[in-house]
Image (cartoon, rainbow, N blue to C red; front, side, top):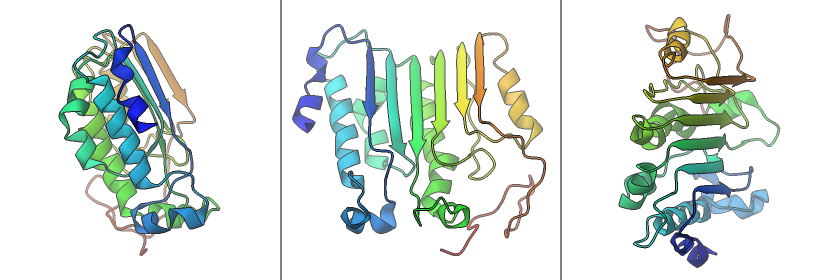
Amino acid sequence: FLAVLKKLGRLRNLRSVKLKSSSECVGPQQRRHWWARNVPESIKFRADVLQSLFAGLNAEYASPKLDQLCIENLQGCGNEMLVRSKDFGAVLSRVQKLELQITTEDVDGDGSLPANLGKKELHSFFGQQLVQGWLEPVREHLTHLKLYSRDMYFGYLPKCHLPTFPALRSLILGGLSFSHEEQLTWVLTHGNTLEELVLDNCPIVIGVRIPSTLDSNNFPIEPLFNS
């Protein structure tokens, strides 16, 4: 399978690629026991698949027409080796339409909010790695962005500040919580280019009660829970 992914570049007219992984995953603390949780894909397998995909799309004979990339069920934990690779950067430099659906570990298997939000990798991913690794490299030339969180809200908790996209024409967001006026201002900064706006299941936060100290902007300070 990985060998096939590395040969995707032979499809010379390829314009759009969609990779769909399992929606179930385990975090770094459970990576050695992923099989016991009946999770079909380990962290290592997911990383190998992404590495092979980007290597294939950046092969010497790869299609120069590729401009759309969709990753469904991208795990919400960092992959520094991938985002620092030359293949990753080269492919994203051609992508104008990006779709990312984020999936996260369900610690107790019951959607328990405190247990899930206590995972530091989720705060690091939404707060830093998603933006710096996936969105900043395409910021200047991206025209279409579809960003969904499959299992949990993000924006306020975990905190996530999205960058502006000067050429953005279509913005589709799922699961982004609006808690600060700056987030509305962020949407409006795309007013000169935006032609389509979809907010799917994006709640407006009017009040919170959480066991955590807040920073100067009223965002929770990590760690939120002891886990």
